[in-house]
View 1 (tube, rainbow, N blue to C red):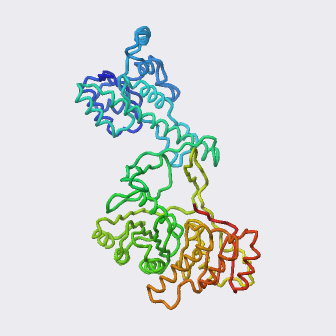
View 2 (view 1 turned 90 degrees about the vertical axis):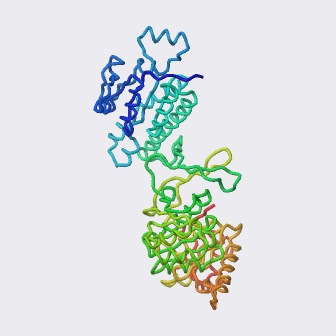
View 3 (view 1 turned 135 degrees about the horizontal axis):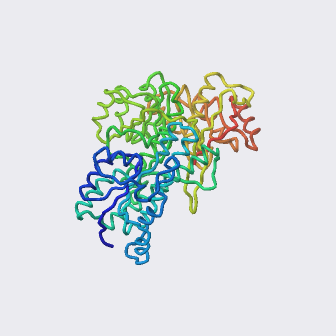
Length: 529
């Protein structure tokens, strides 16, 4: 394939950034400019000579601009194969001129949805002619250059400068690929709006998953894997992917994954007291609330200071200097916070590899949405686990009801357990985790591992007893046997919160009564695999 000189360009853009500069660059190359509506006006206002699309087609724009470019003299000029004699003959017979460059970006559908526009306005911002021209030009990229992103204008101009007003086949091919991705994402947004917002569907027949690459990462979970971060196209909730990185080396795949786990958990406490979450390998190893962030951090660290080394810290309040000092006493990979004061930033600046992420706000833990997990040959899609059980809906199933403090610790442990890999056991006391057992093949072992960690913490800090003594224990799913509950009794727990629903519930309740425990059922489990 050879270079193709650009003699005629069709420009029709909603996003007019860089338009005038591009118009002047094309005009300097004696490129004939053809344009539509507001784009033509912007170019004329800049002193450029422009031919209206109606001059090309012989038809005026009509139906409020819905019909202007859907015409053989447009699409014939785009789709004609220039070295095909039959195509060239048809162009001559019907007076169709070749169009060598198309610069198009589409109606702002996503922005219209995001601003809460009416249904009629949203429908009017579904572009028809634009995607049609983009697809026609991209299909015929052997002869036509298609540019859909203002960020590519400079490269287009550079191509023309280097080639005497032409573009290379490699550039046209790259632009065509990007153009089809743009129209696919655009149609995907529209299909999602129709399915989820307009039709209130949960699982539409066809699911469009869109994203644009924000950055390539150093590697994936392991150095031999490649990885990249993609951001959603269209309206979406903000999260760790949108956080501002204030300092530190670039984030890895595992950093993003762990920081997301930390942010999701700390967001459960966004309306609560100052709270700190410490995460390692996507599991919390310490969570605590307190009167101040530094108090909460110290309590969270005491749960498992060994695992906290090289971990991720997330907080639900703006960071202050004292808390930052405490965090930097051990090696920490990432710190995520809604904000940080100057004193905190100055502390972290001394740790050049520590990444500080400022999220601005915390995501709503009760928000809806879907989660997607690839499996061999397909995708598993489910609604987010945004389940929440009010305290008043807890069902006391033992002879003894929990005290107010026990109930508060049950709630705290239950909230944390939702974010621990199953089988999950969480001990909590006085608004802090006392021990966490995650990801075991049976619940009894999780209970025992959490208790072992609590005993190690007691030895480390010189406490007379582990914090599991007098604690509440949460299980993410029901106890299938009494052995897991008895392990919690051995650790010193006095209250239990679990979903219930096992065929052996009566056996487990009887064991709790015999041990003098208070136990409540939530009726909702929180598996996390």
